[in-house]
Length: 139
Image (tube, rainbow, N blue to C red; front, side, top):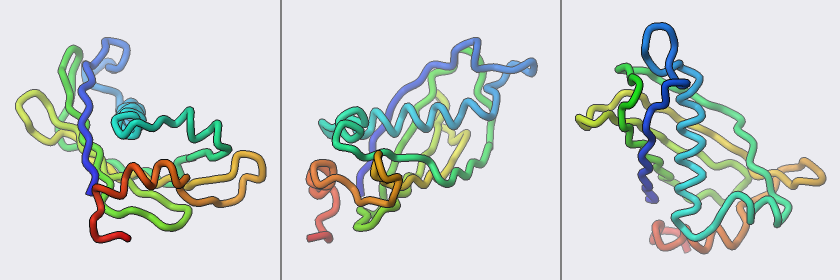
């Protein structure tokens, strides 16, 4: 299992009139954390796109448990429980406040697509190679 964490400080622009983070901004927080999780492996989305692979979001499911407010420091945990062998990848993401309380949780599904044909592809071997040490049960 691969787990990465990334801290995000809530900007004033992220909040609504109720002084809480606007719900759509959590999807952005998830995206930032996924990008940084991949970067922590020594691989980037930019490199993947240069290889001709895109990763569009196909599903997102979020559950809001507690509010986050301006200037809160949030920890976004990104977990990859299964190393996919096909075109689909699913990340579990959780956001915690400074007290360590879970405030938002979600599941984000993406597809690997060929950038030119827009047909399903598989995970680039370069990324798979970097993830393999986290999944000893996969050969």
